[in-house]
Length: 78
Image (tube, rainbow, N blue to C red; front, side, top):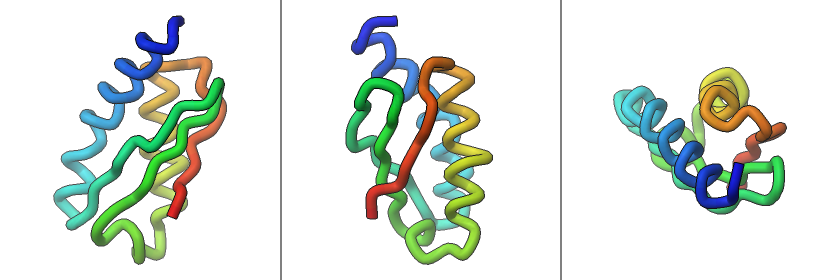
């Protein structure tokens, strides 16, 4: 998968999960993709949410891996 395809697939994954985050007053922004690592920034209500790490791993990371299986980890850069 090329870097452009990876970017496109990660954006598609974020577009899929974004409505769920927005319904709770949050959002997510893609910061960078470095090999198998995706850096994002949780925004709005997501920044102070007590379950944001669970959302990041079980929601965001799982969805990104569905679209870009070679991605190994997604981290939130505060």
